[in-house]
Each structure stands twice: as structure tokens, then as C-alpha cells.
Length: 142
Image: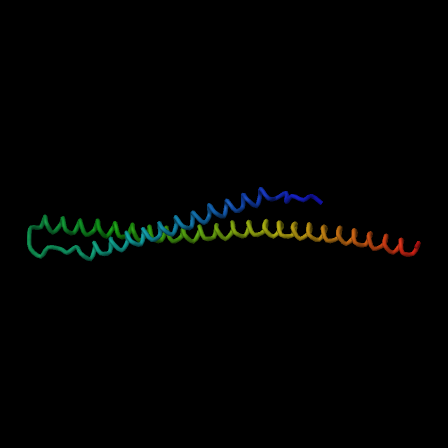
């Protein structure tokens, strides 16, 4: 039985893939929080705009246009929140897959180690049995 685990490079690759997936989850989480903050700022900006009660019709039209632009920005920010939340969910799913793949190879490595230990114990037992049989044989001839 070979002593080295032949899939050790695959295990390192799986661990690296999981690390990359963890980084993607962290980035997605930061992006999601940034999108939420931007949406909250857009909501505040929209609530803070008010139409002028006095002034010209041109000023009223400009205020309505500004309010509509702010509302459009808020809608875009809310969509960005939804997109970032979905991206976060997708990144978490990719992390789960990467962790599962890594764990599969780890289980193979554990089995490999257990097999090596069993082989070592069997070899030791054979050596002990050989010594015992020689000892008995010498005792019978004496």
C-alpha cells in the first residue's frame, strides 16, 4: 500500500476553492449591506423632498422632476438590494458545494490514514505472531 495520499493535491485544491467561495460570500455580504444603505439613503432623500407651495409653475415642474428622479433612483437602489441578496444566496450555495467537495476528499484522506494504520497494526501483529511461533518452536525443541 502506498504511504502517500494520492489525492492530497486535490484536497489542497478543494480547500482553495472553498476559500475562494468564502471570499465571494464575504464580498456578496458587503455588497448587500452597501445596497441596503444606498436604498435607505434613497428613501430618506425621497421623504425629504417636498413640493414648493409657492413659486412659479416652472419651479413646481422642476421639483416634481427632481422628486421623480429621486424615486427612480430609489427604485434602482431597491432592485440593487434584491440583486445583491440573490447574489449572496448564490454565493452561499457555491460555498456549500465547495465545502461538500472538500469534505468528500477529506473523508477519503481519513479512510486512507485508517487503512494505513490497520496495515501497520496487521504487520505488527504478524511480527508478534512470528516471534511467538519461533519462541514456541524453540521451547518444543529444547
